[in-house]
Image 1 (cartoon, rainbow, N blue to C red):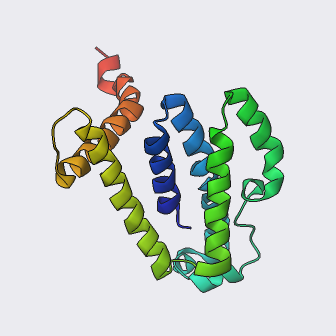
Image 2 (image 1 turned 60 degrees about the vertical axis):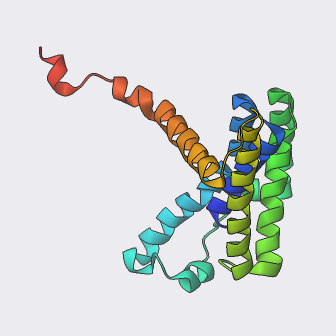
Image 3 (image 1 turned 180 degrees about the vertical axis):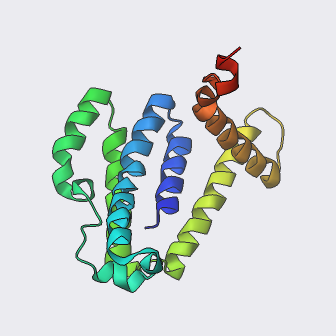
Length: 178
């Protein structure tokens, strides 16, 4: 599956199971961020084919590069198992198995960027908005789907600011000379 589908599946997993920060981090790490290996392979591919080959899907699939790391195979269980014990939770294993299942489904049945995959992407977005509306309605007040979507976007933006906020704490060059 494309990376955004993996991200949305992990976010839905976080919403359904009401995961805390540590559990959500583990889910994102093993359900979404294991796809960073594709970025490293893309760097090698661009070195071989140049920028003109960057969007040539057929050339990328025909190349002899290894696009997936060990984390995309059942052998990774030797790492995932101890990680589950270290985190003292099953969330990493669940997220990893979902990731592998989605990749298998895409490889064996759907194909890359198929219409079914696009439908799954839209269904995940709708599911996240519905889950957020359900969470918002728990306070006794009725909310619209638009308010739920805005709430999700606000939460995502707030998390990004929180994540990258410390980067602004570095002193600026002009402040160091005063």
